[in-house]
Length: 269
Image (cartoon, rainbow, N blue to C red; front, side, top):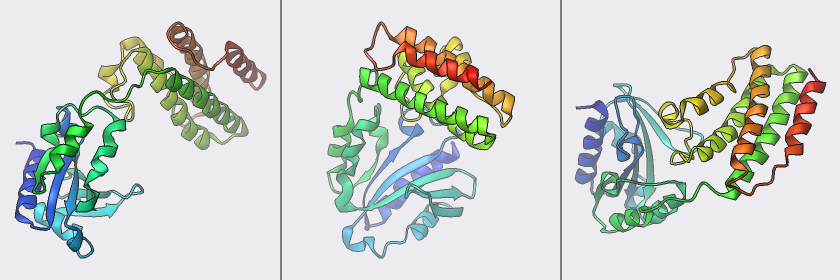
């Protein structure tokens, strides 16, 4: 049995044994049929309101499995590095916040609601999970294409300017945003948008070889020549995607804008 599944079973048993716990749901790879020996384990655990202020998440997790590190990350999630080096994410919330689950619906598709259900003594968790089931949000829209192109132009121009100033590290940081918006457009063009919010996940399998190579050409190390090449290829890819998407979407990116960026690039080379 995978170490992750042992932890999942231990979490489920800990919920059953603790009267303070009202409900528990799991999310992530193991709820999408993609979990393997490299995957995280991720949970929302709801605690009786009357016990929440005195509830010790560290002690509770320690009863699940030994861990070496537990802390709040920048998103307010409690991250756990178990002693077997499995990574976990835990959200402990008051039971009265259970309906926060319904707010997950716009974030994607949840193909296996049964696997998300870990424990519930309220009779309400199943209702919340059923609410987020079904078809996910529409990603292949005129608005999303326009959004990605606009943000690409913004990031590309910023990245080129700081690169020419000699700020290579900052330009590399901005390149990640250029890649993000190009990847959204690549996924729309390939009609493969299920992993919209985590768009590099399974990229090697999700994209066609041609699209994957296009993406590879806009990556770089912290070297001036590689960064210049990446930004140059990104502009070429934007123009290519503009032509491919134009027959299918109405979006706000005039060909003159690409030409203007191309001219700007040549002026500063």
